[in-house]
Image 1 (cartoon, rainbow, N blue to C red):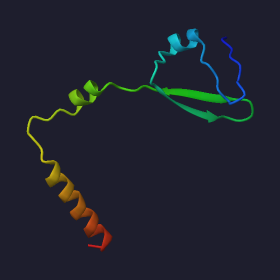
Image 2: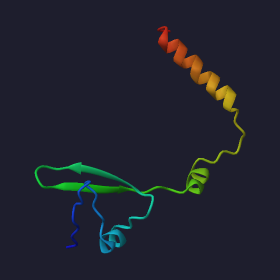
Image 3: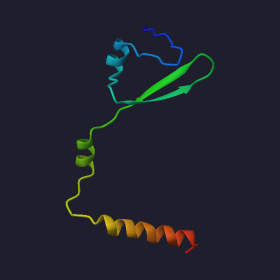
Length: 83
């Protein structure tokens, strides 16, 4: 079991052995929550590189930002007036 001390500002360093085992990397976001008295759960939300999203959401056909925005605005306006 790895241990770390809570600093005066509430900061805690995740020990290297834990970071390596859990594959925690600089820039990752962590979800921190209490789970009862004296128990804290930390879950890592890995940050994916931009290339991952370009690949995952690649489109073959071009798209028109202005047309998409206009369509969203039309839908939002219709919902706002109850259509």
